[in-house]
Amino acid sequence: MAVTVRFAPSPTGRLHIGNARTALYNALYALKTGGDFILRLDDTDTERSTQDFADGIVEDVAWLGIVPARTQTQTARKARHDAVADALRASGRLYACYETPEELEYRRRRLLARGLPPIYDRTGLSLTSDERTALEAEGRRPHWRFRLEGRVVEWDDLARGAQKADTASMSDPVLIREDGRYLYTLTSVVDDIDFAVTHIIRGEDHISNTGVQIELFEALGATAPAFGHHNLLTTADGEGLSKRSGALSLQSLRADGLEPMAVASLAVLTGTAHAVAARADLDALAGDFDLAAVSRGAARFDPADLPALNAQLLHAMTPEDAAPRLKALGLDPDPVLFEAVRANLVRLGDARLWWQVVKGEIAVPVMPEDAAFLRLAAERLPGRIDQASWGLWTKALKAETGRKGRALFHPLRLALTGEESGPELAALLPLIGPDKVRARLLAAAAA
RNA sequence: GCUCCCAUCGUCUAGCGGUCCAGGACGCCGCCCUCUCACGGCGGAAACACGGGUUCGAGUCCCGUUGGGAGUGCCA
Image 1 (cartoon, helix red, strand yellow):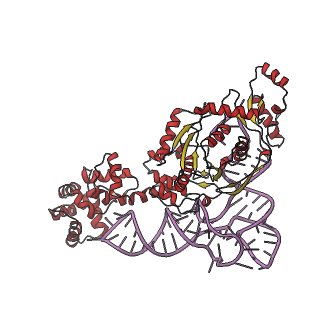
Image 2: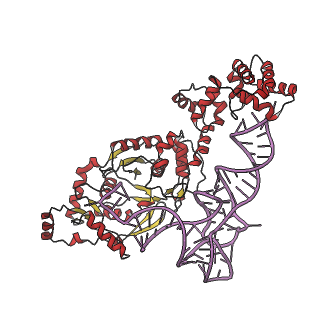
Image 3: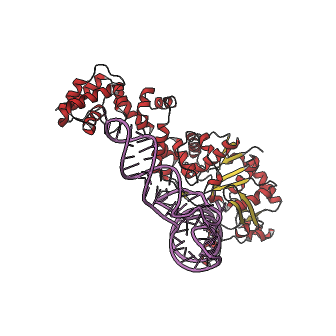
């Protein structure tokens, strides 16, 4: 059977690194098996969901390089959900309850205070029709719960092996709100069935939902798909981030000028047995992706690791691949220049600096203590500069002044580039050109 | 409170009773390369949370403690 996976965020915020990881695991699984990846926007919480967030998530997913075979919202499928709810009512698995949220909260607190698990007592299930009529006469509207069988549900988890959940220790989940809107527990399962989802890969925060969902799949006459629950990420300080977003949003990482594959590589590989290394594209990442290699404990995601990965990607980038990216930055995609400076790039945006150094003008620092040396350097500069010029030129200056090492090179680097460190000067010299080089040397020598 | 999961170098981890004076990756430190910095190459320091068991033998199994993560919603 063809593999179909889905990533189902709720559009109540933008994607953070934890969500992105789940999206990536699904996308990689699809890539590896030749299956389809569906982006499903679980927007049943209409009070918190917004179109802007939905659009943002679509954008975030695309930024990661994931191409969904289909994008779907749940609220658009209300008719289908209605039909399923009716069938569930008919089979006696869905029952009306009349407690208010406040009453339920009060009961929960009382149970907790007594050291008992806060499980719903199924008052609604034993209501007679007269009682229901009386309740509704009070103006109460029902919300609907799914009657659990209360058994040990088992599944073979793709990431954690044999798992079981005892639905007897859980409350019957509410499937329909008092105002008639559905909760994701129902819609998620219905849509998974209708979209023929074969593998549900998600964070371990969903592990306890799995028992309920398997019962629902079965109550609906379907066979539950395979489940795989990966570990969750924490911040560098070790705090859980499953329900936070903040600085680890994809948006902020992108704004920081990081390559999507640097972010994706770390997100996918950290918390697994694989060595963390930057992979050039999702296909390459899929190559060493393995759900079984994901560990069980929470793993830290430290954004401080990103720049090094980003640099790896850039250092291996070909001028051809860089060209469109440089154009997007408004830079002339000069392949020789790119090859000369790429080893010094951490973020692609760093290229601006070297483009400026080579093709534009820079503020040359004045170095009075090296003035004589710099003037001499300007005099000795050959009229025509090529690849060999740097070696010849500096060798001559070394012989004439006795300077060597840092004393010889540092003033030159500073005068030519205005920077303390940078690309190989032998490569930069011909790119900057004799006129500018001479002018900068004299400017740096000026009192 | 209750339930579940986890616990090895700074970080991510390998390890599935002897082959581990614990292996890899990132980071860090040093050396080399280059007539400078960076890039690159090579090398080094660095860990089995604690306490009880079980066993001839425990990083590896069991219990507890501590620490961390998650769930316990008319959120997803």
